[in-house]
Length: 244
Image 1 (cartoon, rainbow, N blue to C red):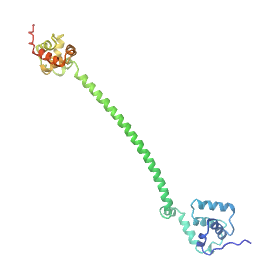
Image 2: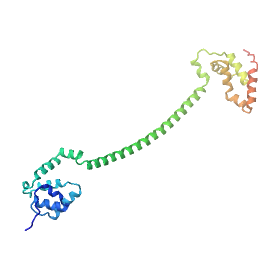
Image 3: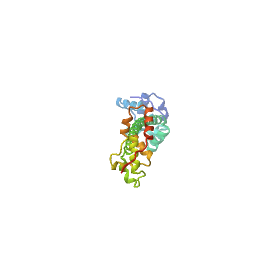
C-alpha cells in the first residue's frame, strides 16, 4: 500500500521543490502518484513560467479530482485562480501582478516599434536627400531655361518689335547716320532702317550697333585702350549728309 504525503492546508504545498510539488499535488488532488508523462508535462509548464496555483487549478478540474473540500484554503485558491484566468483577471495580471512579464513584453514591443521608426526615419532622410538633389537639379535647369529665354528675347530682331511700338522714336535719318557713324556704312535696306527706328533713343541704337558681330569683328584685334579710342573716334565723326 502506497503512503502519500497528506496536507491539511493548501499553502503547505508551495514549500516543496518543483518535482515534489507536482507529486504532492497529484497525491492530494487526484489520490495517486503522477505518471512520467504527467510529471514531464507539469515540470514543463513550470519552466515556461506558469504559476503553481494554475497547476493546482488545472489538476482540480480533472475528472480524477477527489476530496477537494477536505483541503483547507483550496476552494479560495481555486476561486482566485478562476478569476485570474478570466478576461478581467488576465487584464489585471497584465497590468498588475504580472508587471514583470508585462514590462518585458512592453519593452520588446517598444523596442520593435523603435526599430521600425528608426528604419522609417532613415528611409525618410534618404527620400528627403533625393528630393533635395532633384529640386536642386530642377532649379538649375529652370534657371538655365530662363537664362536662355532672356538671351533669346534680348536678341530678337528689332523689326519684330514694330507692332509693340506703333510710334518709332527715331527717324530714318537717325538710323542711317548711326549706321554710318558706328559701322561706316548705310543700312542694308528700308526694312532694316524701319526695324532700327524702334530703339528708345539714339544712344541705345548706337550701343546696339557696337554690340553687333560686324563691329566686334572689326575691333577684335584692338587692345582695350585702342578699342576705347576707336569708339571715341567713331562717335566724333560728323554724320554724313544724306541724299534723297
